[in-house]
Amino acid sequence: MSQNSEKFLLVDDDITFSTTLSRSLKRRGYIVEVAHSVDEALQRCEVFTPDKAVIDLKLETRSGLSLIPILRQRFPKLRMIVLTGYSSIATTVDAIKMGANNYLQKPAGTREILAAFDDHPIQDETPTETLSPPSLDRIEWEHIQRVLAENDGNISETARQLGMHRRTLQRKLQKRPAKN
Image (cartoon, rainbow, N blue to C red):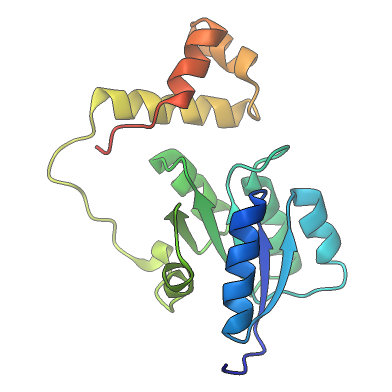
């Protein structure tokens, strides 16, 4: 076991995932604090000054995105990675604009997460375009995600703004987006 004095804040409402990642990081010598909500993360930061943070995008009560600017203001040198099972270009851009250093799609292992903290953050990289343009389904899904984020996750208001029935919107949100 290597000795490492770096402190990790892990914010994820998936108890199994956060416990597994926490154990793996501790085995590598990191000091780890786990929080399962935005409020709990802020509480932990009252006495814990993290060097790195892994934040889940979709937490039970609030988006993990709401935590990024607060942590960035309190800890300007903090390195942050956002994890999500629902990747979209819109949320990636939002996370980076708010101060995250990188963005990974779940499932992500410990090695992949640690590699994402490399000295080459995503914002310094030149984005590469895929050879084929995104599909209409993908564009629609990203637009829905953007409107949903603007409405703080309110399904009814998002459905009204998009001009569709609430149940139709819920069905669309349950589908995974097309890759491109």
